[in-house]
Length: 331
Ligand SMILES: [Zn+2]
Ligand SMILES: [Zn+2]
Image (cartoon, rainbow, N blue to C red; front, side, top):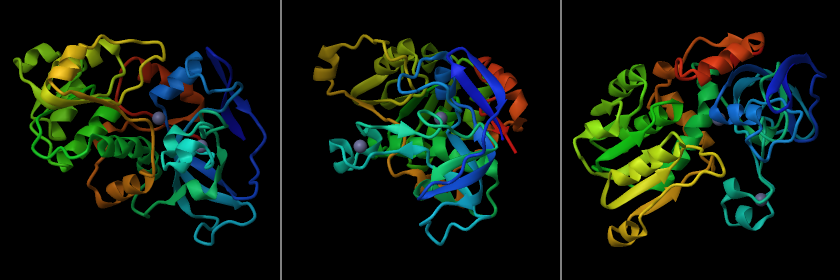
């Protein structure tokens, strides 16, 4: 089969590699759509410490079951259309046993630590596969992964009904969080992003205000702030936008060595809460349900998928801030 192989940081190739065969408990999925996200760029740059090389990246994907290993549940026949939760947990460490699988001490993930879905086929644990309703195409299926991260983020935030909220960053994650925050009754919601086309999308999806710089918010203070950029300066600015008693969620992925300046006096005196949200925690099924019901509409985020041999072009477009969500169609 053909696949994107990153042999070492800084370079990739479209290669012919052996087809995967399913081991016990696994199915092989023919990949119809796989999204490019910031993590893939980090893996390409050698900035994602858990990644071994060489690796086939790709963790946001959907496709069709084409082969089954032994002992596979009966509701996952060959031909089943699925979206796949890429999370791989050990199940026996302290965090897993506390129900916090996403913080697993032996954390792994398809496309991050084992071969992923920028390939014609990928082997996955059958338990990670979620059936896709017939009316959802593979591009919707591939959005289930980032949406599942956003669902986890919402759970970490807690109730937001009637809370003035600001989202920093209107990329895929910021715009998915926006839709969930609108549904949860947060508001009014302001969105900050440097790219004006994204602000247009944010307004369509329910943002009351969409501005290129937090300075344009007229000194407003917010109960809830969500950073969906991972940029340290943006996170500092977001904390500065919180009113007393406010809650900040660090949702974007910063470089591991980045630091921000926070006033401990403000955290104390204003009783600020700063929380994080890491990947997916039993939120994948809800993401599929939200897409199924139409409660979340990914269409304003999507560009036409590109073939596997245009992976480099797609990466350049992501880096260049062109479009919002880019997908590869490997088969
Ligand atoms: Zn991702
Ligand atoms: Zn574990």
